[in-house]
Image (cartoon, rainbow, N blue to C red; front, side, top):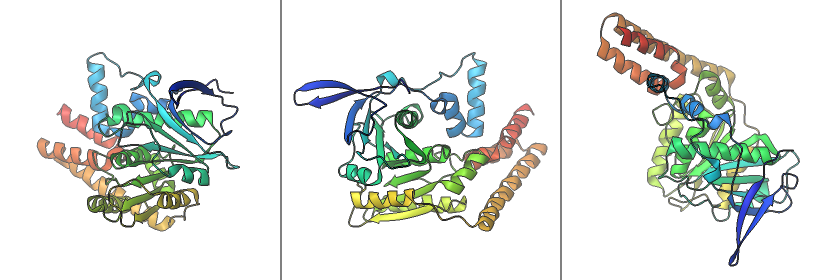
Length: 349
């Protein structure tokens, strides 16, 4: 049995009552638990792993060279859990196969459950967790991403969670961060609820992961877009985001509009339907279409890399550098290690 205990501060009338939740009885009562502290770290939230998953290959190699050159090393973890607080909601009834888990990245700094959502979590057997001081004004790599990863780590250590039903999502700016996390960690999160916020993938905001992880994202990650009909700007960015997913061979995508709604958190009815999608088995992708799509990307990438080699060989340094930077940002880790090797060759000439 894990020694992890959740230290809870619950406001009760005018007094603050401290309590601890034991691992042996996590499903005794449905409850929203505020002011939760965690203690378990994971290498997945460490600075080196964040650099490998969220920086481009060239940026990651430059970071390594910079820290090595000045004789410094990256700190192991970007946040100190002793100073962090979370909110957790645990439904009363545990599904036979274990709880599902929904890690929520908020746009605000208060750790709270949006109104009406707990009924949805009760209906589907979903644990909700969200970090405090993780809003849009906080560092994405320094706080918002590692806090979401640490929230997942501690809940799955503490509660019986079905690993196939671990999801992430957010609202507004938090939704954009959630998409980046889902793209970088398809080995952890198997679905994402994009509530009124998204970006295209395959640029400096959403670097493509290494080939094996990206194949996992294409094959198994489910994405559900939930945006108000009257949220005009976000509907446009959602369209660009979904178009990029199509270009990158990602097919498990659902769209659930909210009628007569502007920029707002999902209403319980739509959120419930979003989890219906995530909890149901996905339709298998057409393997021939997927392989054809992947081959097209590989062919385009190889043509660009060959062009870069020709520019380097011809001494056209500025053009070669500009092309390598474009490859690095657009193809991300699909272009590694070739793009780093070519950049090193260019720098040595």
